[in-house]
Image (cartoon, rainbow, N blue to C red; front, side):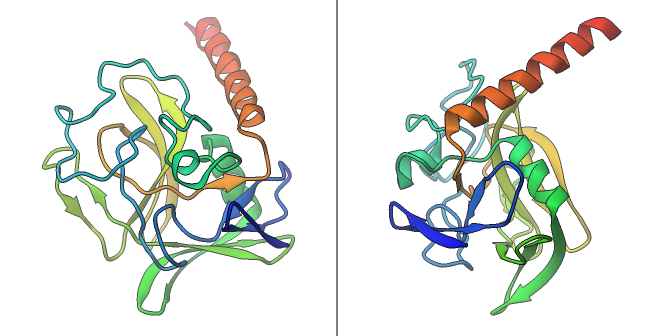
Length: 208
């Protein structure tokens, strides 16, 4: 129920899709490490996260899944690893129990599989505020990118504090961390994501 891909450990949470989640953040040395904070689609940390410093402000990026030019997980960990889609985050939330805990002095969220009882720990990372562009809430809050875009230069992310966790849309230029996934090809994940977006578009047209 555990293994390694390109030297990085994954854990099987018994999810219906077969998605396997990494045991630590991209850029971290262990399960408690924050790792690399990046703007959506960028590959390196920087001092200031703002619309002016965002490299992809004028680009219409529909998906970065598994593309080493934009996907931090693929760029740093190699083929087979990628940033999870919104649907993979939704699946994790649905099929795992959620707890906010402290491990070795680090606050964060544990997702425990309802099927295999394996778990992953997501340490608190904080996030950059989209008004002041400064890092805040590093003690209790966490923010992790999905590779799924949203209208108006947004992208979906998983965010949590000591009370709750949720999927929300945030500005692409602010900094979040990445927890990589594998086990399901990025092409398959892309196809599922695209199909869902098409269905949503049709539904929007019907309602409009």
